[in-house]
Length: 345
View (cartoon, rainbow, N blue to C red):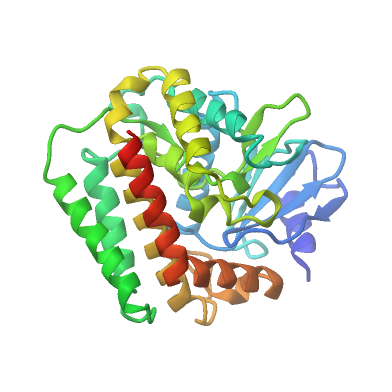
C-alpha cells in the first residue's frame, strides 16, 4: 500500500473527523517527514520518517506535539489539531497540523518577517520548570550544545575531509570549549533549533510562519537567529536559497535585538553562538555523509538518516549541499563571514 493508503487506515482507526477527506501527498522536501494534505480541511498530516532526536515513536510524537503547541503561542507556528498514534500501518504515527497557506520564504526580502517570527517566539515567557517537559531544558544549554557537536564530530574522520577543513572545524571546537569554561550564561527561552529559511512559509499579508517544529527546546535564542542567517542555512533549501551579505545579516541581528523582549541580554553572544551553530551544522553534515549510505532501519523508533527514506532527487540535493558545506570553499566562505561579523560587533 502507499503512504496515503496507510494514512487513510490510521485516520479511520482513530475515528478521525477527516478520515474520508481526499489525501494529496506533497513533494518530498525533508529528511525527517513526509507531508500529506487532507484536502478541503485545512489540515496536513506530518508523518515521521525518523526521529532526529533519536526518540521512540510515541515519545517522538509527544515531543513534536509539545513543540507545536508551545510555539503556536507566539503567533508564528501552525496549530496542532491531533496526533495519530503508532500503529501497524503507521509505525511512527503522525501529527495533524494546521496547513499554512502561503509561499516559500524569499531572501533577502523576507528576512525581516523571519526575524520578527523568531523574536515573537523568543519573547514568550519562560514556563515554570515543572511545565517545560518533555522539551529539552538543560541547566547549561551551551554545554548540551557542545555535547551534541562533539557527538557529531565523531563522524569527522570517516567523512574524509580536506586537512584545512578539519583544522578549521577543530579550531572552532576549541573556541567553543573555551567559551563553555566561561560564566555566566545568558537567559533561556523557547527556541526552534531548526530555523533555517526553508522551514518558513510566508502568508499573503507578509507574516512568516515556522512550519517545522521537531527540535524545539529551552535554550539560547541567538542560535535560532544564527540558523536563520548562516550561509549553510540560507543556501540549503532550493526555494529560498540566497547568500546574504554581511550587511544584511547585521541588519537582521539588529532587528532581532530590537524586536525581542529582553534582547540586550544576548547582544554579546551573537558572534560566539553563531560560530557554535555553524559547528553544529557542519558536524551534522559529516554525520549525514557517513550515515546516509546505510540501509534503512526496521521498526518505528529512533534516528535513521538512511537515504532510502527519501526520493533520489531529494537525497542528491542534500548530498550536493553537504559536499559544498564540507568543501574548502564552503568552509572558508563561512569563516570569512564569522570574522567580518565578529569584527563589526
